[in-house]
Amino acid sequence: MRGVKLSVRGGLAGVAAAAVAVGVAEVVAVLTGPLSAPLIAVGGVVVDNVPGPVKDFGVRVFGVHDKTALIVGTSVLLAAYAYGVGVVALRSWRLAVGGIALFAAVGVAAAVTRHDAGVFAWLPTVAGAALAVWTLRLLLTRAAEEQGAGQDAYGEGRRGFLKGLGIAAGVAAVPGLAGRWLTSRQAVNAARGEVVLPAARQTAPPLPAGVQVPGVTPYVSPNRDFYRIDTALIPPRVDPATWELRIHGMVRNPFTITWEQLLQRPMIERYVTLACVSNEVGGDLIGNALWLGAPIRELLEEAGPLPGADQVVQRSIDGWTCGSPTAALMDGRDALLAVGMNGEPLPVAHGFPVRMVVPGLYGYVSACKWITEIELTRFSDFDAYWVPRGWSAQGPIKTESRIDTPRDGGRRPAGTVVVGGVAWAQHRGITKVEVQVDGGAWSEASLADTVSSDTWRQWSWSWPATAGEHTLRVRATDGAGAVQTSTPAPPAPDGASGWHQISVTVE
Ligand SMILES: Nc1nc2c(c(=O)[nH]1)N[C@H]1C(S)=C(S)[C@@H](COP(=O)(O)O)O[C@H]1N2
Ligand SMILES: [Mo]
Image (cartoon, rainbow, N blue to C red; front, top):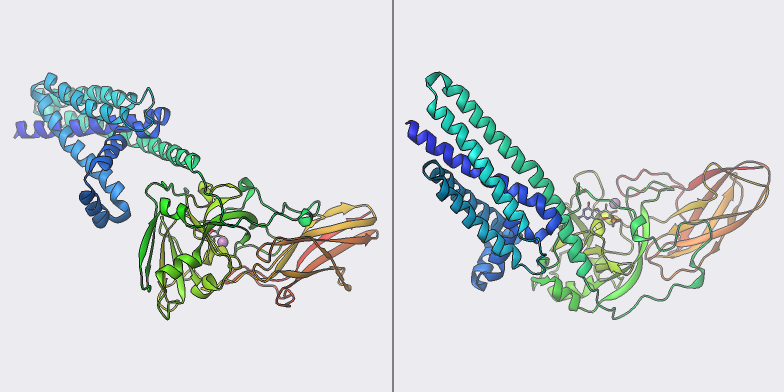
């Protein structure tokens, strides 16, 4: 009995030592590069060398998780091997060290032959293996002490061994996961750095000189200031090399395209203002960018939606979904499967490598980031992520306007005060903006230039301000002739409405 127990302990000690090796290697790989971590390196060698049919089988069986399946498979093999090494170590320490060295040699060979391997690519594996030897020795000493001790000491010895295992697991898991997290961030940043965006078939019209009113938020929002809204705790890291978009559901011709294929499609460049349904009246969950992407209508036409497929569901790599009306994506507006934002690849937080952008629809029903799937279906058959949570399935953007200058609660000397801001009604356009002082008559503001009806538009009005406390209000009229409603509504279920109002003290 004792003999069996001891060999089990030897095996467990071997597995714990291997876990420590992998965890430590992940930490070292933060410094030496993502592909130098042994599991990833070995997995990469396997992926690059498996015959096509086996790879296809893996993709069919495991779908987009084939990478994960591979890492799990490699880990299971490693654990089995390490168990054996631990058992052997009880009889021959030399043989066990030889076994660890052999496995380390495989890891090093894989790491140093990876594309772009650095001079220290061997280090994670060697550091991990060295710590594995040390951990194994320590755990086996504990196990042996218990074995040698009398019946009384048995319980204590076992506790010591278990404690050792626990510490080893902690050493393996905590820094190992942190290391993995950091290296995956490095990996996606590196992949993003290597992306060369294709030239647009149609570039965006040049920005007219007069789009910007001084004191108003920038007409084009820089990427670093662009509002960010999503349900992801950590933005998903998607490798463009393995990215695929599957178009399926109620279509005549379902198909899948890769990153390379997407980049070869004719791309267009368009300014589009994105808005969040959660934006309060006067809020700043809205931004305007120059997007580069493939017209989604062309992809949908190739897929051939079947009659009745009134909803285009977009699914992100993390499972989040949104649904846009098929009609809106096919009506000729510049709905894009976007890869570029303001001249750069999409930032990771804004959907790298691919997202949707649809003029005129709130983001929660149209702007899927990290998109990997498009499914044609019916609104009556599928509720996207926010719908069961109380938000409307349909989310056209409401006509709205905002005062940016003066700021609410600001002070100005009496005389001419320039009041300015933005107004938006994407895809309908803005045709008029009016300002009202203290509930009086509405005065028409001057509209700044704009590139299209798909972006917000700035406006300004010269106010002859007299001393006192004043209230300013703004309202817009859209291209369909509709005046922005005065009726206040909260963001849920389909977007806030009402007039933005500020107070100003004139001295
Ligand atoms: N994958 C994914 N895409 C998403 C979301 C999300 O939670 N997950 N949020 C949507 C919402 S509600 C908005 S308003 C826009 C915001 O895009 P941005 O973060 O680039 O500004 O992304 C949309 N796309
Ligand atoms: Mo949103």
